[in-house]
Length: 375
Ligand code: ADP
Ligand code: MG
Image 1: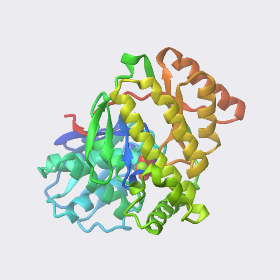
Image 2 (image 1 turned 180 degrees about the vertical axis):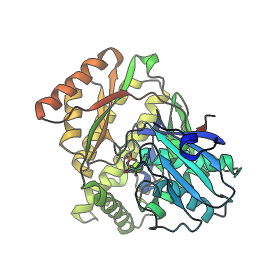
Image 3 (image 1 turned 90 degrees about the vertical axis):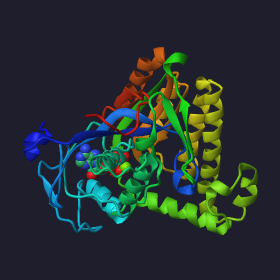
């Protein structure tokens, strides 16, 4: 464990933190102009930074390769590989927008589990974006920083992600989930007082990540876009549930389940919003479980490990469960009565042991704050 001073030999200007997230519901909807409902985790990436007098960018991560990556002013997509591409991408995206981002020393330390579908990448990007905004006085709002971070990941790192992760990391508020319309970024903080209802949201990180996921994401996204084009719609978000059956028969068979997932998933987000506004949090359970079935059977992004968490948790009395994140491994979100929480977690661990899988990591998802300056 090092700190900024020991890595860069000077005191920092400040520290910014940005959280990872779990998505309550609304999976694979963000690149279809749809609805999402993420909450920020207590886990954060922290960027400790100092402005430089020159135009060098020096990057160090506690979770990196133990070396300082030093980059000159000419940042180009493809020129930076490995983890340093993420923070470099954010500086690149802000500069490309004409923002006056000069040289910077950056020390990263994160406790967001990586590659677990909890958005360690967006946490890292948003911590750096917020730090740049702070030290260079850019005056951008959280959504503007989130969009720059998304463009950074899309165009510089080369991951075609939607905007949910960065918006969640920048804009979530403590005690709430963020109801976000990814078409126009309109949003509302929806109170999520689980403890008051005797409930808990457990995150089960399966610790598996199947390689399949990387290419599959782009293919699924392209399939959704093709379906929207065939239906002559701007995006699948524009297909209302009442028109679903009529639309499906116009599509090639391989696109139908994708469209069914996106349309029903958007409807599930709205159903969850209605339940949350009514304070009926326990009733979210079956909606989450239906979302999992749709990801498993229609979108086909689940896997044996995430399916096992869901079935074991439900068999042990959980109110609902679904995989969260892009899929092919990663984490499962489980809604459970607080007093049943430990029993459900043990049942999942026992099921994993019986299947010969490595022990999953479990923790409670406490709705936490979005990106902020911490010192
Ligand atoms: P997720 O966002 O679901 O955690 P991704 O594959 O999108 O998974 O992002 C993980 C990548 O983000 C890592 O491979 C690494 O390159 C980068 N990353 C995230 N956090 C850190 C960190 N603390 N230090 C260095 N790199 C990080
Ligand atoms: Mg990511």
